[in-house]
Amino acid sequence: MARPSMIMLDEPSLGPAPLMVEQMYEALDGRRRTGLSILLVEQDVYMALDFASRAYVLENGTIALAAASDVLRHDDHVRRSYLGI
Image (cartoon, rainbow, N blue to C red; front, side, top):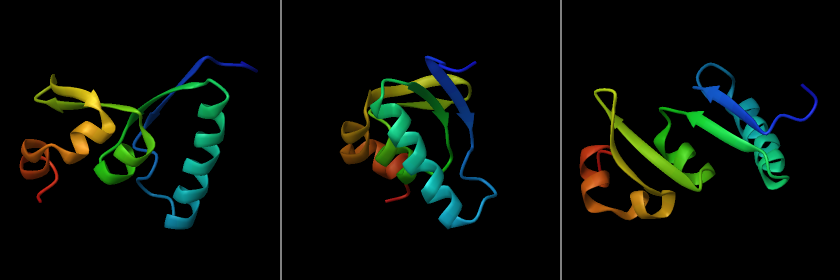
């Protein structure tokens, strides 16, 4: 699998030291810029929204919201319901 068109990551920030997580996301960003699609499942909402161009919010296994990451980050309902702000 030398040139995948997509990779899937499940909770990549869970466990590694913060410096390793930062380096991992930098490496992923470099790959993304070459055209690689990345499907990311992440509970660190702020990190996920910083990284992703589009985001989906799952609620009880169903897509509750879907939009550009910037839109979700600034939506009052999302901030109150999912970000605790």
